[in-house]
Amino acid sequence: MASSSCSLVSIPPSLTPAKIPTSTILILRNAGLILNPPPPPLSFPTLSSKPISVKPFLSVLRSSHSQKYVYHDPIPKFAEAETQKFKAELFNKLSKDKDKFGDDLDSVIVVCVEIFNDFLHNEYGGSGTLLVEPFTDMFVALKEKKLPGAPVAARASLLWAQNHLDHDWEFPWRVTGV
Image (tube, rainbow, N blue to C red; front, side, top):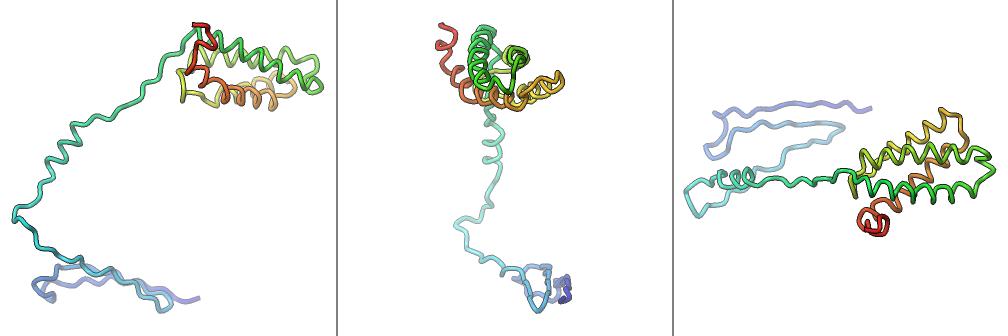
């Protein structure tokens, strides 16, 4: 393996010509490779001898306020209507796999609907506020109650919410009849 070395060279002001600024050069050597800094930037004559002020630019930055998107509070009427829609469609989806759920299908639906309803009433505030936590909570609750098909039910619930919830929020009259 080739040895590496690093040296820091400082050019003292007394050795530099008057027009070249004092600089520090870091030279890395590795297997014959020498890395040097790029040459100093070219200087261009300015049209004005006045220095450029940064103050107007900073005052523009200070005066512009960043806009924050404000999410809505949960809407109980929307939450109720969406929960009913979720319950019906989750039942239709999971009842296709009766072998997996057996006699516990209704219990699985109750757990999922309860958690989904709580989420809609307490946390969902419109497009962009769908969280994964209620669906992981469904999975955990179903496992703790030793109900069958926890992964299938939680996944079906999440997919339904991803495909319908934000869209229904944008077009609430489809859900609530308003």
